[in-house]
Structure formats: C-alpha cells, structure tokens
Image 1 (cartoon, rainbow, N blue to C red):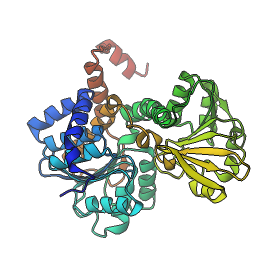
Image 2 (spheres, rainbow, N blue to C red; image 1 turned 90 degrees about the horizontal axis):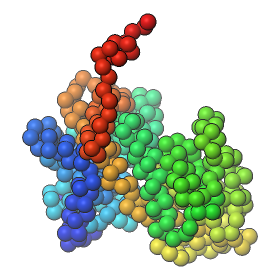
Image 3 (cartoon, one colour; image 1 turned 180 degrees about the vertical axis):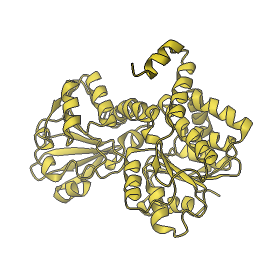
Image 4 (tube, helix red, strand yellow; image 1 turned 90 degrees about the vertical axis):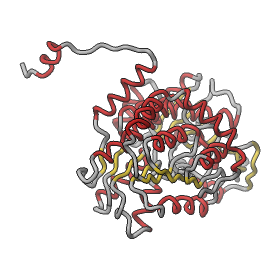
Length: 413
C-alpha cells in the first residue's frame, strides 16, 4: 500500500539512500544494534517527515528494529520522488510526492493518522494536530510520540497547556545534539544551498537580513557572514537581539531593514514577519526566502494582493511587479527554501537528528505507561551517547574526568 509519483524511480532512490548511509555512521551503528535486539518489534510507527534520502535511512533503521512504518511528507514540496519510490518497493506504506496540493497533503497525513499507530513521529506538528483534532479515538493505541522541529514543539506545548495532549511526546528538537547542530549548522548551510541553486546570485557584498536569531537564525547569519555578506538581524526578543549585537551583527526593526536589504531570510516560526508594508519600501530586485517550517512568515497573500503581476522567471523563483514599478523575487513559494530548492540538511547533520529520533522511539517503548502525558526532553545520557558516537565516527578522542575531579565537582567545598 503506497502512493508515490513513479515507482520506477526506485533504482535512483536506492542510490541516494546508499549515499546518505555512507555519511550517517551513528544511525548505521544504531541500526546494527537494532537488528540484533529488535527493540521495536510489533510496534507500528506513523511518521510525517520530509521524505528525503536521510529520512529513508531513519525509516530503514526503524524497520531493522522490528517496526512497521507508515510515512507521509511534512511539506508538499520537500519529497524526493526517487526516495519515496525506493521506500515503496521496500514495503514502507509511503504516501508522498513532490508538488502535493493542500488537499493531497492532508490526505496523505490522514492515511498515516488512520493507520492506528503506536508511536507518532512528526516534523512540524501537523500529524500530532491532525490526530488530536480529527480522530476521536486518538490515544487509544498511541503510547508516545516525538517532534523534530521548534515549530512543532511550540504547538505541542500549547496542546499541553490547554490540557488536550493525549500522549507523552519527546521533544527531539530540544536535544542538544539536535538543535545545536541541525538547526544551526544544517539550516545555515542548506538555506544558502537552496538560495544559490534557485538564483545563482553572489552573496558576497549583499546585505542579508535575517529575521529571528534563534539557533536557525544564528546559523544563517554565521554562514551569510562567511560568504562575505553584510548581515542585519531583526528580533523581538531583547536578549537574542543583544546576543546578535555582541556577535557583531547590525540589529534593527524590519521596517528599517526592509529599506537596505538585498536578501531577506525569515527564521522565526511566526506569521507575517515580512508584510506588504515592508515589501513596498524595499529596493528593486530583492530576494525573499523562508527558512521557517511553515509558509506563513512571508505574507505571500499580501504581496499577491498588491502586485500588478507575477511570473515564474526561474525554477523556484517567482517575480512580483509592484505598483511602484519595483520587483521582488520570492523563492520556493515562501516554503522551506533549503528543502524546496535544494536537498535539505547534509546527511552528516541529520545523522545526529535521526539518531535522536531512533533512540527516542526506543525510549518510549521501554518506558511505556510510565511517562507522564506532557512534552519531555530526551534524557541527557542518550543525548551525550549520541555525541560520543559521532566523535568516535570522526576518530576524535576527548578527555575523561579523574575520580578526584569528579569528587571535586560534587563537593560544596
């Protein structure tokens, strides 16, 4: 049972998956352990993730552990059709293809939600919310879930505060080996990969405006500076704004940044960060890109409502002619530019993120019925173990504390 664009693409997908596996040594080590112990035996997993070669490595690992996996995409434009086809030929119940309509996107999610899963893995919260809103018997057989993104964790904590959360969820996003690496180094690099593939512009010398200075914004700002850009940060949090200043970036409101920026990248997790009022003050030819999970940070509807005309000028580049005669260029329809215009994060960083996912699933199974219904962090010792395995895969050794040092740190004297 599956629905993909073209199952004949499977051989190409298998090559992509094998390439990713060569660059994900920690997850492959976990797979080897799972194959021996089968800790996920008899468990059905419902997953909504970006259907990429890296996700396929995770899915294969879960199956090696004994799980049955149902999979849909967490973005209508992020699926790698070759990978979806390859997974379909391996028995995964996959419902995903690039270019889904909104209706098709939620239809795919519904197939996963109605598969009666025991564990829910999500990227952005759409599967969790679908289950809570539309399936009355939700929670009957679900004993835990995980969440990959900042956006999704925010939504789940809102469910928890409202008293509506039906099962415990591990906030994989909040593991240090996830957000310190995936959010910062992964998104920082892959965002510019997407921008440059879509536009082929030179970043050096440009004024790049980064909206939001969380871990994603930090990574984007760092990479923009490394490429030779002059970087401006916009923020609403005074502490993060101060940190951006101390890191050497200019900080100002979007109303001011709009007048000087050449490239704008949103990374806030909030809506309407760039609005029509900002666009009308921008220079001719600016580029707008989004690195937040949902396509709500750039107010596309507002831009379309004021535009005189629009046209697609390159793959993933839409030109809007404004009433003042200037043009702005929106990338990837305002969706995740790194996944729509490129391939998402490098396999090496997803090695960490998906190792967290695999071990979070194992943790939920081992502690079934003993975990409070709320949003939890993955235990520190698991986070630390992943970091150690990654260092080992890189042939890097670190120091260990002596007994005297351990005692010193324990002592109040």
